[in-house]
Each structure stands twice: as C-alpha cells, then as structure tokens.
Length: 368
Image (cartoon, rainbow, N blue to C red; front, side):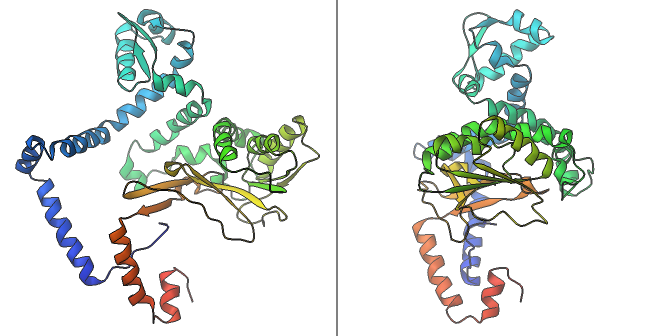
C-alpha cells in the first residue's frame, strides 16, 4: 500500500474534483491542444506530454524490440565490433529485410547504432546492457509475463488460468515447497542469481556492513548476495532462509566458495516457518527510482533518506522470493508538494486529534 494515506475533508475533495474535472475537459479539447502546441510558453509542456503519450503507445514495441535483441544474443554478437546486416540475418535465420527492421528499431532506442551502409554496432544502452548480464536474464524471463498479458482483461478478471509466470515460480503452486524438486526451483533461482551482482554492488556501496555481525538474507536464493557481502565484510556471519530445495543449492554454492564455517542455511516456508533469529541485518526490498534498497533489521524500525524532485507516485518491489504473490507486493511512495502536505497535516490534526481508538485502528487497517 502507499507509504502515506490522504485524509481529505469532503469539501476539499469536492473542490479538488471540480478543479480536476475542469482540467480534464480542457486537456481533452482538440482546440486547446492545438493552442498549447503553438503558444511559446506552453509549447514545451505540450511536446513533452505528447512524447510521454507516444511512449505509452509504443512501450510494447520497445519491450519487444529489446526482447528480440536479447533472444538473438545480438549485443553479444556485436561485442567484438560492427557487423553487416546480411551476416546478422544469416546468424538469426531471418531475411536481411527483417534484420534491417530490427536493427533500425533497436537503433531508435539507442540499443544499436548504424555504422555505415547496412552496418550496425552497439549503441550506448546496448553496450551498458552487456556489462549487466542480469538485465538480459530478466528480459528473457519477461517472456512469461508478456504471454500472460496477451489478454490483460482476462488476466485481471481471473479468466486466464494458465498463468505462465506462476508456473515459472513453482512456489506459487506449493506454499510449503515440500513437493518441489531441484528442477522445479532451478530456473528462477538461476534468474535471481544472475541479477544479484548489480544489486549487490549498489547495496554494498551504499550501506557498509562493517558495523554488523550477522546478515540474514530472507529468500536468499543460491546465496549470491551473501557471497558478495562476505567478500565486503570479512567479519560478517551469514544466514540464509529459503525453500528447502533452494536452500540446498545455496549450501552447495557457499560451501564451494569457502564460506561453510561462516554461513547457516535454514530451509523453510515463508508461510509456515518462523524466520531464523540472531541476525542484526536482514536483506529485503527496494525502490529503484530513489536508488534505495532497505535492509529490514530485527527488533527496530528502519529508515532511510532520499530527495524526490518531482511530484508523483513512485513504486518499489520486493527483492526476494516471498511467496506466491511475489510479483504483486507493491511498495509505493506518493510525493506531494509542500503545500499539499501541509494541508494534509492540518486536516489530519483536526480529523484524528480527538478520534476514538476504533477510528485509529480503522485508519490503520487493523481489525478490533
């Protein structure tokens, strides 16, 4: 749920709704759109909004262009230098015309660059992607999501029972993990392992673990993050909690890394088993837009700081395997203007200053 809730008075709500209704009618007006595009002071705003709307419409094409490049290993092929379209087409078993279309689309997204007539090399984003192999792994994983979204209404209405993503995450079908085999958990465990290096680099650079004695990675997968943390903090004891077959993979990996005497592996279910105790830092979740990844620390409230420069809603993600609804655990922070926040605080003071306990419990979503 959002990090903060708004409690507007009916009068404020009505006033805001009237203003937004007037704004919506104005923005929907074709004549106003033409005027805004021509008037010098509003022209930059109109062009920016038009570009944003175009990106919304073209987003699916962008994602599929990236997916095609990743599936063809196009970036790896061009690592050594530019290549002509005919050679790329032959390698991909498609016509030169089709490869030209893909290369042009990828060039528009800065994934590739045209290097002369019918020659293409890596673009700025394509080269950056080569340095983060976890991104390519995630893109390949998105194929299951794209298949589920083939009919978004059926998905939202619960009519599509053959959800590919749920089958990719086998723990979604077995909460305890008791019936899962290594073959069941291996694909997603490998995916998480591929994404961990870039996450670990950011987290360990932003938050030194030297002052901690024991790190618990909840849903730690094959132990990739713990291995990186062990290198960064030699004094750190390590604990990992995950489904039994995943925990077995982690045990093997961390033992091969020479960490057997520093790590305790605890197999279990997120639903049915308590978390291991004794750690003073737990690996947990992130809000990429703010460059924030927070470690939940047992026995205390945790906090961080960031500076938001733009009003809006910013979404985060659960960074570990936490059950069947792993993909549906939204972390949201709503950023408002100073004036809007001040108005909310004053209204909250009036609304809750003399509220009975039941009102507080209701506002917090706690049943009596």
